[in-house]
Image (cartoon, rainbow, N blue to C red; front, top):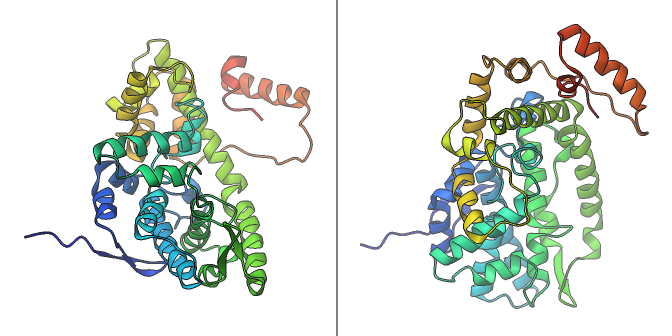
Length: 357
């Protein structure tokens, strides 16, 4: 008996989300996509907003739901989107974040230098395309903005894409920050296409103003909240110290996937196809639990810098942070660093993990 793949998912933000294409169901069921269930959408933001425990898996499904609404609206206004294009743009938005790792932005500044999640998403989509015998060709063209109909890539990645419409509403819902609530339904109903470009009808201008204000407020109240920044920088320094020790040959507790990145340097340049494939293989085994379990164990590590940083993270003793609109005097930073080094008996180099800009 053939399996009915036209499933529905109950989402706390939108209600029922329909899966319209068999290939979408196959991609959702793929282990590489299921990994997103184990990666939080907002990383360490739950240190400030305890409800922010939603995942990138939920966000991807939500963005796909909005994409189907946008396709319906644009078609109703007389613009052609073929069934093949609708399937492809669904795939593109579903997989747009598949290259995110655990605590993604911290990872990009410590373990995997110069490889952004956008690069990784494209590499993973290309691998999936090989597995699915070229069925993702059009989705990849849309994802990379190489598709002839320019408005389709804009729906995936643009100033008013389905990614932004979902994450603002979803992050607002789970953090409880009501300033981020946007009328995504109203905005989508106002979408149109003129000269092959995505536009908003004039009567939707107030909804767009509210969207822009909500986005700005969410950045200051959530994404760039000073305590969230403190936690993220603490995570960056933990991973940097762990990698520094591992590259010197010190043994650290780590899962095989995490150990792979701790003991190797990765930049975007000068890597063979085979090396990138090996890196991707380990990256796709990495999720939040690898990092969090390591930090829990590293609290007892003989290296005092690593142990102290990990204790701070686990016990939420975060860095004190100051925001300035002018460069901070290097002399002042040096003085604070010197005081920290003397108080905790750290070398000047070790104190840089605790005082920095």
